[in-house]
Structure formats: structure tokens, C-alpha cells
Length: 576
Ligand code: C2E
Ligand code: MG
Ligand code: MG
Picture (cartoon, rainbow, N blue to C red):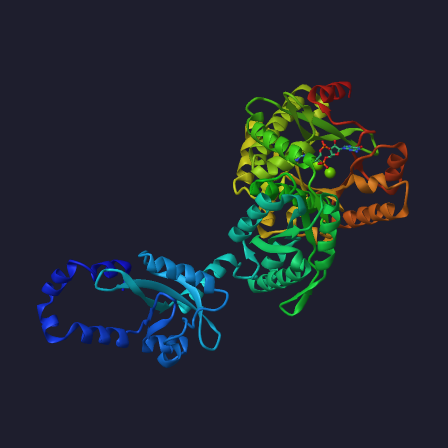
């Protein structure tokens, strides 16, 4: 029964309603019909008088609330508790003031004290003069429906794998905090170091187990001090409350030390490091802003100090803005002719002759000046711009080599070294592009040496690329040897002809025995494997003479020749 029906039951519409059901009214009396409806209804129906006393209580009300009609009639409505009594009185007053309501959701209680959620509708009962003398209430039990709805909401709020807050809900909670009390909150973003590798190597079920255990640990470390959520993958977030701006770093450290233990999954133990970035929320009102800042701090931790928690610093944002700017400008640097190549001589230590040069890229930035590769090569790697940039370097340097060959007899034997980045190795067209560039420049394949780092010999894809390059006839060198993980023996699988000893070992030559021992071992292994060796970063006479006495054939370094423009190399060639 609804509000509207209540209105219709009183007044002039009665005749029309009855007229459309002539058979019904003639077969049963109104009173009989009413009894059948009230006593047979599955909905709880009761009548309450002006002072709140129950006048009627149907069997469905007995079933739903647990009080029999005898117990309910003549008393105040028993389903109203002390706490809800004032609210009930207000509703009753409204109903008596001819403002009935329908489907109003309220919590009432059963005889045993348990709560029941009901949707209440009221109908005024009038005397012959039209005055309201009692109110009929209808209550539908919607406890289960509400519970199911709440479960759904809860589900949407929860990350299904870990049970932490799901992304969307966490962001809502964060926004509330920022708009309410940002001055005492900090946001931490966490990421498991090397999780992807574990996932790839041990399978997703192990990965999931790790994420779940980690989430549990995170939740107990956070406790009542905040909320933890999962943004996706292995990226977690924590909103810490009660953190003063000055204790931001301490809060981050404490959180990290509470969770940094090996994790058991799939029957084994994983010592997975956790990196984190933290930002204090004071003064921030925008969710995206704090998220971006925590993320920048996390990135910094991952890159330079894995396993630690970094605090956001404005400089990180400035650097990110600059990176973004460089990124966009880099896309046009080749076309604008801003890419410059410098060449560093590679010297035969026995004869002092220049046996080759290494092409090293620079960016002549219109505002920032000449930028070293460290400022833009990693950027180009991440955007993929390195593919075009790398081919440009290769084309320019091959043309340059051809030029030198034509002009200087001493350049006839010179080998050109060009660096390849991992991203280039993943281009299926790499070998074809290299072949085309060599042909165009008129340079023989054997005069080109491509340098790759040990990190680039990890996947089957890399191996294939190396083999294809090798079969073109170009020479392959391992750059920065000793800084990666692979052993010389493992590297024998690839068609390398040259190994470049990283300059960190050369730098340590005169100061300690370890670096010397590593160089000695590398030299002797290379010899037995038939690999040529180039020592990098020779800066002092002491280093040079030690390398010579150890039997190292070739070297490059500031002492022997800095990276310099092509014209400077031309001048060197002219003198020999
Ligand atoms: P790399 O291939 O190991 O190049 C040698 C780096 O050591 C060069 O730095 C060079 O200037 C520097 N160097 C040479 N001798 C000395 C020395 O005696 N002392 C010291 N301290 N440093 C010395 P640069 O030019 O800044 O290049 C850095 C790295 O950038 C290169 O390391 C290479 O990995 C990368 N790179 C350079 N050009 C290219 C390129 O065209 N493509 C790609 N993918 N990477 C490049
Ligand atoms: Mg190199
Ligand atoms: Mg190197």
C-alpha cells in the first residue's frame, strides 16, 4: 500500500474504484476483503493510535518482529527502541499531520533485540469527518537486500586479490583526507623491487601469493595509523595519519622497516626489496598532485637507492618537468640538426697508433648547451626515440668514417665503434637498417664495431639480434664489462670479438689489488677465448703503464684523447 493509494481510499474516487470491480464488491464485503488483506499479507501491518499505542498487529508483524498481537496491542510500538523513540515520535507526528510516507528505510528491532532493516510506508486512517484518527503502518523486511547491497559496495571498495582498499576507493579516502585534514597526513607509495622478474620466472600464482603476503604485512604495519590500498600490479599506497611535516622521513622509514622481511611463497623464500616514496599532504588539495609527488619520490628511490624510502622534494618535480620538456624537444632534435657526434680515439698501447674511434652522441640544446648522453639517452630509451636517434648516429658516423677514408690514408684501417642501446636491439629491423646504412655510406661491415652492454644479452630476442648483426660481418663488443652479471664463459655463446673493460676497474688500478686482479683475470680469460680487449677511462700515466705491463692491447681515455669533434680527429689523421 502506498501513499497514493491511501489518498484514493478516501473521498470521491471510491465509487469509480468499486464500479470497475462490480463482481468483487458484490461477492465480498469491504470488511471481509480488508481482513483477508491485513491478515493474509506477507508484509507486517499495524495500526498506531495518536498516542503511539498499537491498535492492530497482523500475523506477518508477529513473524517479523517476534511479538504476538496480544503482546503488542495496547502498548507503545515495541519495535521502537529507546534510541529510535524520538525519531519515531517525529515520524508519527508527520503521519498524523497528513504527511504520510512510503518506503522510508529505518532500523527497527525484533523481540530478541536483533536489528531489522525495514522499508516503512504509512496510510492515514480517517473518521467520518475526514480527521486522521490512526495511522496504518506497513513494514517490509529489507535486511537481506541491504546486506547484499553493502557486500557489493564493500567488494568494489576492496582489491579482490589482497583485500586492501581498491584504487578507486583509496583515492576517495585520500581526497576526503586532503579536503578535511591534509596537515597531519602523508602519502606513501611502495613498489616491490624486481617483482616482474619473479612473476615471469615463477608464475603468476607465486606472484599473487607474494602480493597477498606483502599486503597482509603492510596492513598490520599500518595498523590503526592509516589506510592501505593497492593501485595495481605491485604498486601499493598508504595514507598515514597523525604525521607532522617534520616527521615525514621518519614515518616512511618506520613503515618500511616494519615490512622489509623475506616473503614465503610457492614453497620458497623471496627476499624482495621494497622501495618507497613519501610526501606530506600539507597544503595539497588535489589527489593527483600528491600521487604524482609520491610517485616521483618512489621513482627516485627505485633508481638511485632501491630498498629505501625517499621523501618528495620540489627538485624532483622540477627535474620531472625538465625531463618532460626535453622529451618533447628531443623528438625534433634530429630534424633540427641539434645532434652532434664526438669521437674518442682508441689507441694501440704498443705502437701508440689510433686504431679506431668511438662515436659518442651529444645534444646541442638551444638553451641548455651541449648535453652529455646521460642527460638524454635514458630519456630517449624510455620514449623509444632512441631508435631513430641511434640510426642517425650510425648513419652520420659511417658517413664520417667514409669521409676520413677518402681523405686520409691512415684512416684506411680505422674501426668505428658505435653504441647500441637495449631498445634498439628489440627492433626487428635493426640488422637490415645497419646493412642499408653501411651500403649507403660505402663502408665495409668489418670496419664497424657495435658496442652493447652485458645487460643486453639476457633474452632470446637479444641473442637473435646479436647473431643477425654478427652474420652481417660487423664486429661486436661488450661495453662496460664487469658492471653486469654475466660471466665471460656465458658470453662465449655470442659472436663477440672485443671486450671493453669498464673504466671503474681502470680507475681502481693504482689504489687497490682487487681491481688489478679483476683486470688480470679478464685479460687472461679474454686471451684464451680469443677476444680483443680495450681498457676504458685511462686518465693517468700510472694506469697507462700498468695496463701496458699487464699486456692490455688497446685503450681509450682522457689521457689518450678526449671525445672531440670530427674536425679534431681529422687533424690527428692528417698528422700521421
Ligand atoms: P661508453 O660507451 O662507455 O662511453 C665511454 C664514456 O666514457 C664516454 O662518456 C666518454 O666520454 C667517457 N670517457 C672516456 N674516457 C674517459 C676518461 O678517461 N675518464 C672518464 N671519467 N670518462 C671517460 P659519454 O660520452 O658521456 O657517454 C656516456 C655513455 O653514453 C656511453 O658510455 C654510452 O653508453 C652512452 N652513449 C654515448 N653515445 C651513445 C649513442 O650514440 N648511442 C647510445 N645508445 N648510447 C650512447
Ligand atoms: Mg661505448
Ligand atoms: Mg663503456
